[in-house]
Amino acid sequence: MPNWKFWERHESDAGQPHRRTAPAGEIPRPAANQPQAVYDPQRLNALRRRREALIFDVEQSELATRPDNPWLARIALLDETRRTVEAELALVEPLPLPPRPEFDSKPVRIDTVRWEDPAIVAFLVGNERIEFVSELDWAERGAYIARNELVFESGDLDRLLPGELPIEMVVETRERLEEALFIFASDLRRRAEQDEPMPRDVTLDLIIQVCPVCGDWRAWGGYCPTCTELDQRRERLRREIERIRSDANAEREEREKLADRLPVALRRLADTDQEIARIEAAR
Ligand SMILES: [Zn+2]
Image (cartoon, rainbow, N blue to C red):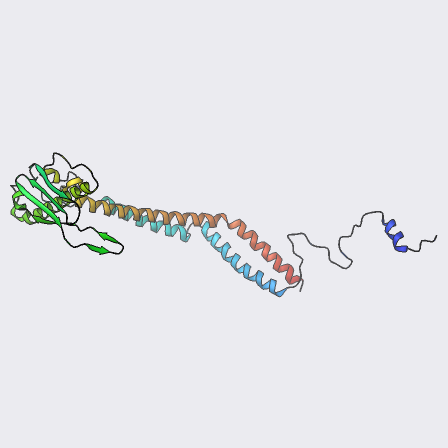
């Protein structure tokens, strides 16, 4: 029987696998990293924009590798500022004060401690009865009721002042004594509220004493307003130094990152230039 089904013969004769991967007339596909060059003005514009960005990258990276780069200039400026602040920190010292006379060690006897408003805290310093009270009205602030602070109510503070006190120091010393007594009274009130035991063997020179660090008076519990103020100033300066240091590190890291990126930036620019050239050639 004549084989009239010529296509079957054709298929059976083929034998070898089909080698051609693209239909006739089609340009073989380029390698994956080399897109087929077809003239495409939109693509060309996009590439030209990318080229501008890459040129900027290359310039920045080249700048970062130069010895006189702006990052190093900024780091130098930050280091200089930091040294100024460090010098300022080293100078934070208490101002010289006229010597503070010590209070004497009169015994303190706790008389009454009622912490709820209207609170009353009373104690005897030697024979002098000192009384603090809180105001009667309650201040309502938002959702909670704030407790009223104690205020000095009665007692002759002049009778507690050190004997050899220079006349020009009397007013200030009395104020500081009242402040120290307030801190002591507030601590008694807090202890009562929190069910903590009352302090024992209290004497006046524990409620107010000369600070061994700065020479000013410090209050019950070791609270020294002068040292606290100096500590806060030191803390502010330390935070400032830390901030400057971290800014300088950020500049350093940015410069290093840009300098390291130079070979990559150059390669990307070369790739883009090549692609632009191929598309332009296809025009
Ligand atoms: Zn102090």
